[in-house]
Amino acid sequence: MADKARNASDKPSSRLRWDLAHELGHLVMHAGKRTGDKETESQADIFAGAFLLPRRALLREFPRRDRIDWASVFALKQRWGVSVAAVVRGAYRLGLVSELQQTSAFKYISFNGWRKREPGEPPQERPEAVMAAFQALEDDGVCPVARTAAAVNVSEELVLESTGHVYEPRRAEPAPMTQAPATVLDFAAAKGRLRP
Image 1 (cartoon, rainbow, N blue to C red):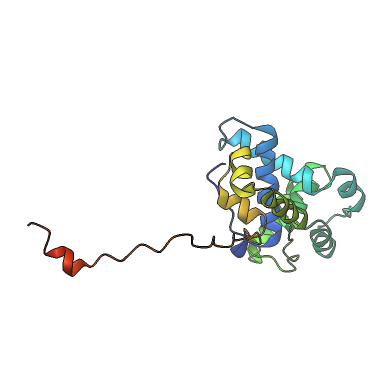
Image 2 (tube, rainbow, N blue to C red; image 1 turned 60 degrees about the vertical axis):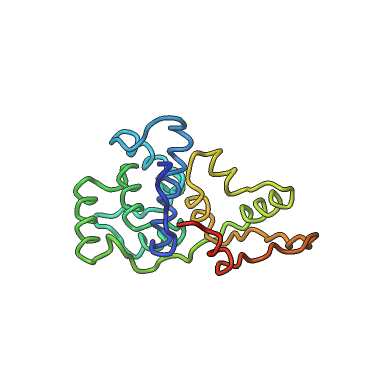
């Protein structure tokens, strides 16, 4: 997990939200443990589903019908900012659709080419509070990206990408020169002093 970086620019927002919630699941449940096996990945997915699709809300809002109501599924996608696949998976997890309905839904998703890109993607979110916190830390002389990455054992790239690539460290003003700049070495003159 520590080596994974998510590129916000080429992932749909619903998939990026899922990936970030999945990685948060690893941070919460598997701190200091090796991840990547089937069990820890499944646990992180269950965490992401519970985190992004609240149980009570999904039980209340998912339509109970003989067939999947795709207009309703897309409305839930917009409401919760997750993929239609995540909505269907969540509905199955809560017993709102049968295994046959879930299988049929995933075939429909594949048939329509929605495995990688779905219509109706919600806009990318920008974590404003994180940016304000980073700026406050930097004002206090702390390097927030490096410190955050080290604290949660992830790459600085993941910290930047998960915060939307909008963090720009403030550049310190160059200190005034107190001494004359170093002279440039005259290679032609020095060449005569060098021995082969």
